[in-house]
Amino acid sequence: MRTVGTQVRGIRAPIIKEGDDLADIVVDSLQKSWQSEGYELKDKDVVAITESLLARAQGNYINLDDIAEEINEIFADSVGIVFPILSRNRFSMILKGIAKTKKKIYLQLSYPNDEVGNPLLDSQKLYELDINPYTDVIDEELYYKEFGGFKHPFTGINYVDLYKEIAQETEIEIIAANQPKSILKYTKQVIAADIHTRERTKKLLEKAGAETVISLADICNKDKGGGYNPDYGLLGSNKASDYELKLFPRLGQEFVDKVHEKLKKLTNKNIEVMIYGDGAFKDPQAKIWELADPVVSPAYTSGLEGTPNEVKLKYLADNDFKNLKGEKLLNAVKEEITEKGDDLRADIKSQGTTPRRLTDLLGSLSDLVSGSGDKGTPIVLIQGYFDNLADD
Image (tube, rainbow, N blue to C red):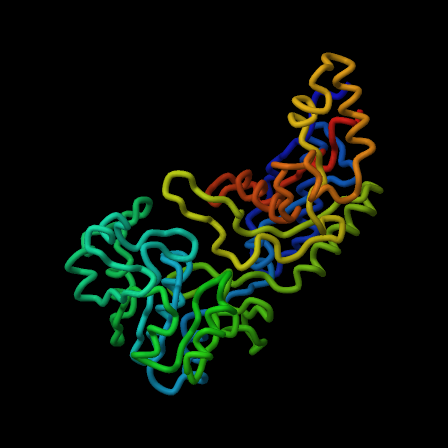
């Protein structure tokens, strides 16, 4: 009987620069790894490559002037920005680009937390002050009076202070409010800067009378000879330098299919390939949801479509086979797995198995393995993920 199930390896790779043939580099890095470590690739193994590698190889970068130019094309005077996340790596650079237009900025932050859970203020104090987050608007004067000393528990930063400093070359007014239409008291020209709820926010603003409404996905989404992303625009971008941002990669499907074919030719195995960004997990201490990218996986081969279809082993052991032990119990469970149906979502035997999308699960696993720092393993190999207890 097999004694090992899923195995995950972080694969080291060279530092990628613009123009590198990333598909060849991925395959070469994997080959060096299996030759060094003495393992083999198998059908249904998964190779995951972090999105930043592909974006760097593509040279998919923009600068602050690119953002300012597009804002000037879309907005006549003032710019309202609704529900951006609190981030030095993400939104701060976008705000810096918008500020270069010298247009007045009205910035509306959600409270007590942003979309992904970053806290703007002390939520407990809202109860003490009898502030209703569903209806009340907190202006700058009230914010600084009651919450001005608040700092993010991880970064140690007050984001109202940070955003005002970033936009100091123009005039900026910041409010905290959770109704999108609150911004329309200040301007009718708005950027819905939220990530996962942007379409809902746009519709609410349009219904409330906004004249111009776009999302971050509508900025830097066209080929003008430099960086762009046709699907996500500025969504998924992050800071590359004090003047540049790296965008989410383009042509991801072409890339994963190319790597798949190269590995098939080299190993004669059917290897699934995906690109991953942020993992979709929540920090238990600060309650921050890590998914600041628009999706976990922007591209993947077809074998990764769908959700897991699994039975719950402890349910079977405690219920259907509660009178069995040892080899008889193991054989009964294996038989149940072998004969399970194709769709167990409504079956009591699958309760608690959380059938999320495979790419979200695998991308989150890959993100945790590779990290975002100096591990140097931007390629992740996952083996045995699609196996189960009945596979000997």
